[in-house]
Image (cartoon, rainbow, N blue to C red; front, side, top):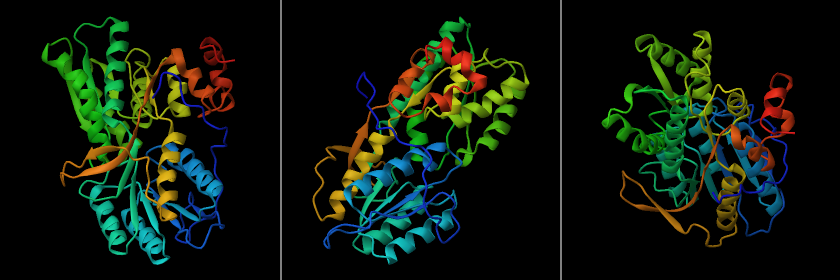
Length: 367
């Protein structure tokens, strides 16, 4: 991301939309009923509402707004973390004649099966946010996910330096092993932390993945980590949800604020944890920019045009093929620049600075 944050248009984060016939409570129905006869319909499958708040708020809102503005008919649904539901939604969209299918996979196996069906039906495909390994999507839109991890690793290093700990034990609470992004995040933060372990400046502590990014499981896993290694002094948590799970355990042990914890997604909860000193940092990804980049590709494909914006490539490590890509830059957020996320329109002061956090907001220069 450029040094300044991208300006986001003000938008309510809670989207409205009709429920999917299969009982999904966070999907939107068709949007943008206008459009020329040569313009096709777009199908979008989001993954869940549990791993991160973004899927039910930011992505849904921004994608729907972009398609509506372009007069493109779009069916946006959420699989609610259910692989069978994911495939059922995809089958319905393919049968309905979508011209473009955009997915956020739950795992590469399920994602590939859906992409294969779409390709066999002559439908253009886009991997959104997560690359489907060996999936063969026509395009991929995401952030530089290795850079995300590097920012997390460096953030933890900076916070541990501030604490002046000697040979701190660092625990790693990684994302889902079935999510390629989690692999890339870990690649990024391990590139920062491994030299610290190798030089014995840090001590490598427990290192475990959290299935399906499940925050409840993350709490259990971290509690076990802390029980087995009571001297943990830093936690590399792969997103804000996992970070908050660790913070909850630290609070019960009266260690919150003493043990730096990282995060990602700049959620309201994560930002509030940063303001109170319980979380060290988060990584902000301008989701409106990601949604706009993906919708721009989809709109061009729906109109039968060749997209011109996917100027980068991402190597699919399983197929060995280069996938035309749009990769965006993330930004590190600490207490010093939380207010910039508000200025960018991603969260509002009202959402962040509730009564319990009013003083923390004032102290951080949020007025």
